[in-house]
Image 1 (cartoon, rainbow, N blue to C red):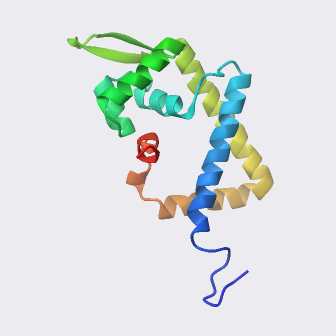
Image 2: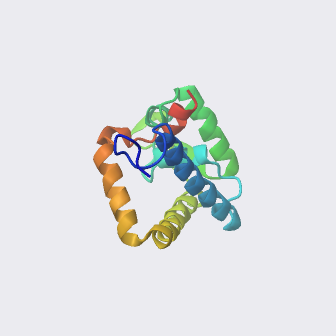
Length: 160
């Protein structure tokens, strides 16, 4: 449907809502499947934090910076990940004064499963929209979304 200016689709304010709803549906489906696969306690913020920690590990300051939150807020999330068995604090081999946060095998497993689940979810979207159309949608989003907007600090941004 076109309006008088030739624009197709709904009202302009609907675009960010649809993008957010698409994001939310993917994340919700991911976490439902992670729960079925043995990771029921993983929440979206934990996924962002584990991505921020990465396979090489990170300090609490680095995790906070990557998430766009304070060192203290990052520390609380890391405390929870540690309590759940997804991360651990170890001595930094390069600086005895620092603690390094590392993913445990359970944390690495949850990230590996997440990658596979995202592939499955993308395939479902491809089945619904068509592989070519989904590829075009992804290419279009890469065109309009600035490279610097692709950051891990979404949890901090959404939280204010």
